[in-house]
Image (cartoon, rainbow, N blue to C red; front, top):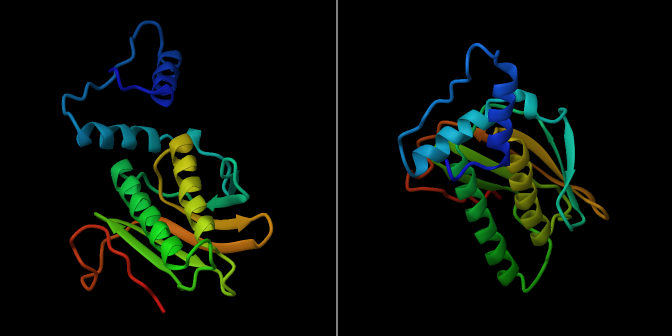
Length: 191
């Protein structure tokens, strides 16, 4: 119970308010530890559609010139798989920054990431307008959105204040095709 955050407490409070005085609220007790606890927490918070913003919804990535338009909200996702994909995405950003000697335009047509059955694809817009830091900020924005509204499948557009739309993407639960490796997240370069 020590690990409850503000969102979880808000859900419990709402449950208490909506329950009549004669019947005390029942809160399921999870006796598992570790990642099972995280995945159960994810399912509870993401399943609450009343906490989702309007569809579509635009957010500003904190302290950046990047914003995201998120739309087509879907099913609940495993928090740990989303974090795993975002970690691998940020690792690729670091590699791209080093390889290009700075914040150069991205030349790839698409980035594809897997974690379990979670799939993420980001496609920079044509014309090489997306730069490496914009991609890093897009990953930050996805995390920012999901931490606030729940770990859910979503489509998104990446916008930069100066360049305008610079890419699109999706995060979705998807059964992995056989030709893609099965040893954790993988990046497939599309040309």
